[in-house]
Length: 138
Image (tube, rainbow, N blue to C red; front, side, top):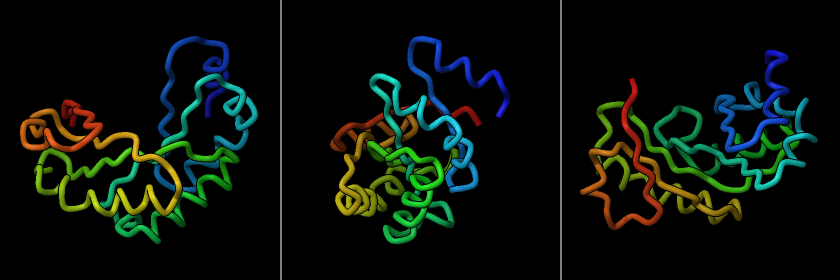
């Protein structure tokens, strides 16, 4: 990571760091784990996409989750369910894998913070709690 990353520890406001979805991407966080753990209101979310090859089951995803926690030295505080197939994602795709996300959260003892979806699917998913709608940028 560039040296400029250290500026995030002296800035205010919300900061989002996306380090990829496995242990390799999260290793860099280990270098900054002390600083990150000292941050007020710090949240460390696993972004769970059950349509990715390595995170299709609860068992596989828990292995990834624990591996990331070990190399980053930062415990997760919650799970973001992001059933993402790009622009072809349907409301049915979101609903189909929601039970897996709920099982993952329960078995990991972490809250399911939000279900992420494309904004145009919101009318079809109104009944899902903590829906976080986004615009497609790809």
